[in-house]
Length: 144
Length: 138
Picture 1 (cartoon, chains in turn yellow, brown):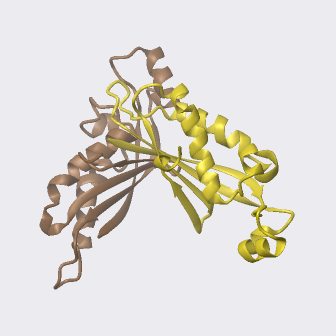
Picture 2: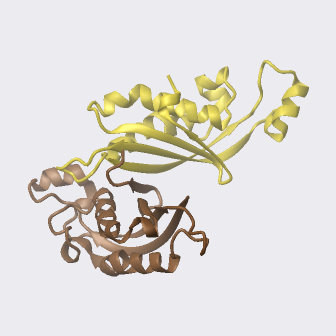
Picture 3: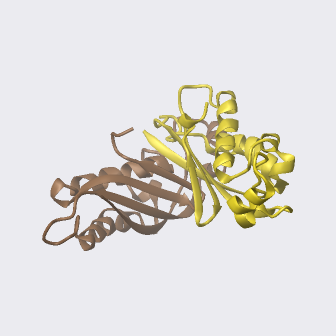
C-alpha cells in the first residue's frame, strides 16, 4: 500500500465561545481565543490517502481529483471566512481545530464516492495545523 | 523506537506511460507528461526501527545510515534525469509512488535486525506532496 499526502492552506477567522457556558466561564476556558471580535489563522491542512499502486499511471491517487475535491468542499467554503458566522456547521459547534478537523473529514467522506467510486484510494487521515505549534490529526474512522 | 534521517537530492523526470497515446498521457499526467522532462528538489526521510544497543546507547550507527543513503540513493539519483539514467525508471514511470518503492527496495537489503529494521520511507516531491511507503505493511 502507498500513502500519499497533500498539503493545502487557507486563512480564516474564528472565535472560541461555548454557548452553554457563561461569559466568565468562556473567558476562563478559552482565554484570548474568546475575544468577542474573533481572530484568524493561516491554517495548514494535510489530507492523506491510502491505496495500491495503479499499474497504468504508476500512482496511488489522481492528485488532480483530490485537489478538486478538497478545493470544492473545504478550501472554497473556508477561505477568508469567519468560520462561526459563515460555515453552517459552526453555528452550533465551537470551531476549535479539533472540530474543524472533524468537519473536514465529514465533508470529504460525504463526497468521497462521487470522486473516487472504486474501493481505492481511501481517505486515511486529516491533519490541521492551526499554527505551526498546534497540530490536530483526525482519522476518518472516528467520524460517523 | 523510531529514528529518522533526512537527505535531499535534485532530479528531473517525465511521467509518461509508453503504452498510452499522447492524449491519454496528457490527460493522465498533465504538465508532468512534457516529454522534455522537469525537475524537483526531492526530500527523503528514512525511518529505522529498533532498540538502543545497551553498550553504545544507539539503535544504529547514524554515520553508517548516512553512508548507505548517500551510496544507494543520493549518488545514483542526484542531478540525474531519472527516466534516462536511473533504472528501473527506463521502464517504470517515476511517480513519487514508484520512487518511494524503488528507494525502499534499494535500502531494504542493508538493514538486518542487528542494525535496526527499515520502518518506512517518505519522499517529498514538493513541500505540498509526499508519499509514505512501509514495504509489505498496509
